[in-house]
Length: 309
Image (tube, rainbow, N blue to C red; front, side, top):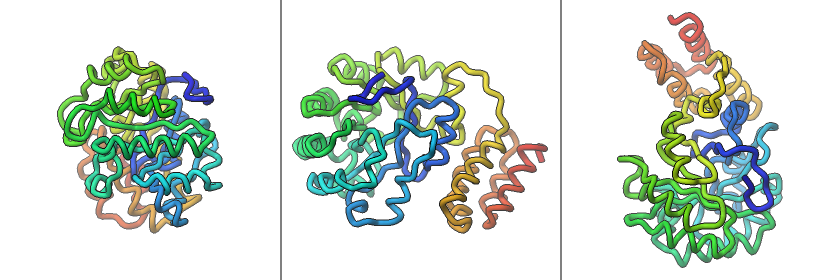
């Protein structure tokens, strides 16, 4: 598929997930067949203020090409400033988050709150298209508290968006219930630009169900937690791998950029996700949660995953 002037070799996208899809995890997903990936959600305002922790979110890996930066915010002037930053030059696509349901995002008028304020969303997309030579894409939901996805997505297309990704839920649904595939299909049928479907894709059956909506691409979010190899599974590839080796690669890549003190806390959630499908892992999960030393956590994981202890 093609988004603007960017060719993407495949239809599987790794979703941008705040606090989850660090550059090392994205690199693993790409190695297992993900066609495209995004940074974690990045605050446009924090980038303008040169916040170092925010700039750390812009780190990419060598096999992550093409790649997008995902920005959030609700101030068009701030977007205009951030699009001129040198730090964004390495990215092929700029994606705007207009779908995040998190309360701390919504209360500031960002994320899915923009779906209640279509005039502000329109001002933002127009500003970004006008101030960037890169394709501008948008990740959205069906709406905030009612389905406005047809009007909203058409507005985005009319104002220069090169693609949209639709998560098939309202903001008020968060992640409850089932994704609305029919609504995603309607958006796809009414747009000329590429449409990427997102929501509840965890296996081959749900992947095929999403494809039946006619979407150009499929984005995997929660289905990839602890499973960067899900992309190979969806592609029908029989890939042999050692889970501890995957974890070890994830950790070692992050060690090149971040301190072990930081990683000993940050990586715990990843360790638990890696263990979620392992039989008899409850005791190990408790040990991991209690352990403060990263190297000791790795020893615990290795013992369990290699020997089943």
